[in-house]
Image 1 (cartoon, rainbow over the protein chains, first blue to last red):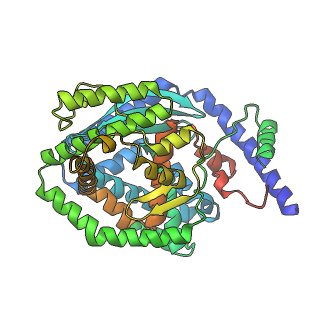
Image 2 (tube, rainbow over the protein chains, first blue to last red):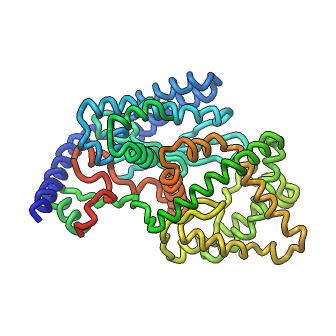
Image 3 (cartoon, rainbow over the protein chains, first blue to last red):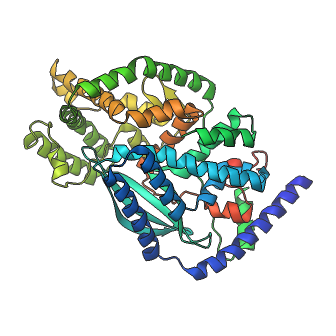
Length: 201
Length: 255
């Protein structure tokens, strides 16, 4: 029961902190147009990579650059680690974030050659809770177009995307499952999981 | 617990944000499902993957496309029936006009003229969706032999859909099997075409069972709800607030 109360008090303090950090964020005012412009830049860069017809390894590098420039990699990495992020040391978090960035670039960068001849288009933007959801379509040759959404937030202090959702499948939520499985496989050993992550993707 | 959380949010914050969640998978049959998953993966490795690769390499892309179009067009009556059962007149009529155009100008459904004409996309309604519209719950997650991931609701829907295509009652054999055959080939074609993505899911994931369950449920819920990302929790709350990342991780004893 005592632990219960402590936990609740922690939650209340946590929520208060959230409010404190949110309010200045609102002053920065990321609006629909700014979010759309950011995603349009991301999409232009992605289209350029697809159209370049470079070898896969160089596409992976380009994708890592896009991810680093426009994505909130720290938050995405932390969020895929879930509650385990709370027991990781600062050094482990840094190593994990670095390994995670390379892993995402390899895993998703490889997919770009399947997009050859395709093009991503931005269609609409709307606010959902604290973020802006920018919706677009991926038009591929010879198959039905599919839906892609970028979630953009300014809560890190910068306007960055923190998730990419394709046909309802969220990169962040899917990778949380994957990172969770990798951690389970190593019986919760974060360092061993990071070593695996450097090889994966 | 929910009421308590909402209360805390109210008192701590001027603007409460009662975040809904992408809930944890309800998977009481996980042990059985995992056995079925192992079977499906070995079947894919031994038969489906090589055959699909062979089919995809052997058959020209255009021919694959034509077979896929034909299979899709043959499934339209079933989709129209399901739209009617859902009381969705708009999608029923849009699907109907697509079918008419593709069956006539598109030479019996071989060419997807409707998409080229920028007609509204097909609804792909199935009986699983009809059950959702009727208010049936998703039910436990299942992994079916050959077919793979499904919710109990969708498994029931698939069974009913074996009987919802009116063409099956009109066409005599062997014509009635053309649609089934084409749809089988369409599935093989997709396994070949998206081969690398499926390989990466089945053979590169740390736990391919958990990964396919997550992908299936996310995609299926999106198709049913069309709600976008409204159900997501704000990940910044977790990072800056220290609160639980999602209610999946809340203490189950604390209710």
